[in-house]
Each structure stands twice: as structure tokens, then as C-alpha cells.
Length: 125
Image (cartoon, rainbow, N blue to C red; front, side, top):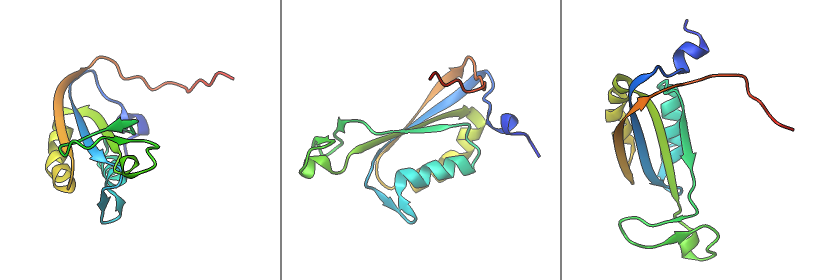
């Protein structure tokens, strides 16, 4: 069995960054799509992923959606989910990931890992 740091630490070198542009209210078989995709990435051993909720955005329909809009503009807000990992690992899971994305946009960019550090958390009180 590999240790926690062996399975999650990224090595310096070539990698792929994948970014998914989704809607927070897009559903899936088990709840919301962005949450299902985060669980999928965790299960597949991706080193880490982040879901960010922007304040506002619009997609291909060109309807602006704003947090706290109070009307239809406050619904259907964007979610940006991104992750970076080893090129081979990402390429191996991409077909299944793309199959799971039923609404949204997926992009990938080659990148370079310069340093991946796993240290002791420091909380300033």
C-alpha cells in the first residue's frame, strides 16, 4: 500500500491542467454534477481539485447570471472546477470525465509543475 504523500504529491515536470466550466444547478445521477465530478477525481487519485464559484458569469446563451440577483439572474450560476496532474494520469481519465460532463465546457492546457510541497499547516491566530 502506498503512503498518502506518494499518491497525492505531484512530481516536478510536465503536467496537464484541466478546467471545467459548469453550472452549479446542473444535476447528475447522484446530485449536482460538480460534486459528482469532484468525487470522481478524488476516487481516481487526482492530487487535488478546486471548485470555485464566481460572482457572475454567462455562457453560450449570453444571459448574465449574478449571485444574489434575486430573480432569474441569480439562478444557474457558474462553477469552475480545475485540477492539475501527471499527463498520463489525466489522459487516462479524460474519456470517462468527458462522458460525465453533460453540460458545460472542458479545456486542457499543458503546464509545468515547478514545486509541489506538502508541509505542516500553519494557522496564524
